[in-house]
View 1 (cartoon, rainbow, N blue to C red):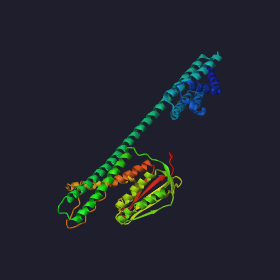
View 2: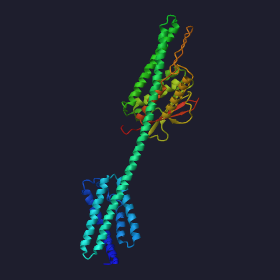
View 3: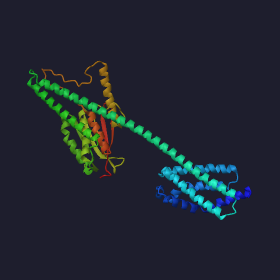
View 4: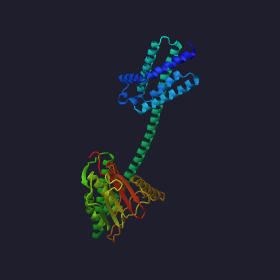
Length: 440
């Protein structure tokens, strides 16, 4: 049989395979589903399972029919590209590499059976054409296995590299979080040392025999304030420790946020009046939401006490209501003061604000140390004039702890926390709470 007759025989074989395409694919899928090592195939639809294999078979059949060498080479490249695309899709469908290789094995057997049956049914077929057909089939499945495996390996390496990058980012974020946590605790220790220093000074004054009764009375009052402040800071530290340890859990229920916040403002009115500040509240009379009422109150109370503590003139305004952007899903609490503000006029997250405040405190301490001040890291004790009954009030401290508690509580409640600040014009904390929780 001459070359022309052999080419005609291969073209007839290609036509036969094209006509038997549906049966070949059905046999391939059936064999794959029977294979206990190919478990993903059963979850795919027929179209998903076939994927790029029809394109691979198209290229194979055209390659059998091609008469020019250049056409055969182009079709071989097309066949490899379709096999690589099949490997990509199998990766995306969740296949393991062994499953991909087992599928190619079953496809080779199904195609091989079909080719052998055709050869047996045509005893006059040129032996050279049969050899060419078997060789083309071996090349098809060999290329398919290699290209699919290469694409699969490339994607796995890319995923591993992406995971490594994600891990590096996570480690960096964890390190930064740990640094900030240590700064908060460092600040807390500094504040506690200051309170203890005040108490030591007061104790020494009380034991002095020349202290007059009016001064002694003021000293006792100062001692009571220092003890109360110390107790409050220790409680805050315990709360922060529980939050950081994950021991606090949210308890979701339906409650009236407006009633709770209005009551909180009334209860803290005495604190505002004592500091000669106004305390205003504004919002709807009722605001029914889902959430943890105890933790929402703790957020509001910490922000409100912090605002009252650091506001010297004017006062504080508390507002609440539905979120205008999404009233059905979220509600908003705002605490606005007329205090000194933060030395930064932009809107930022609370984490950034705390970091900047800490950096500013460290810079101040560093300057004091460079100036040769040995007491730069020690809270100064109050000076006492024995002729006067007026004692200095200790500077408020512990702001970082309270705001860290607010941040942790907001994370626990899936709430957003922002601040708007302008030097000399006060600060507004804005907390956005969900109105519904999936675990409610």
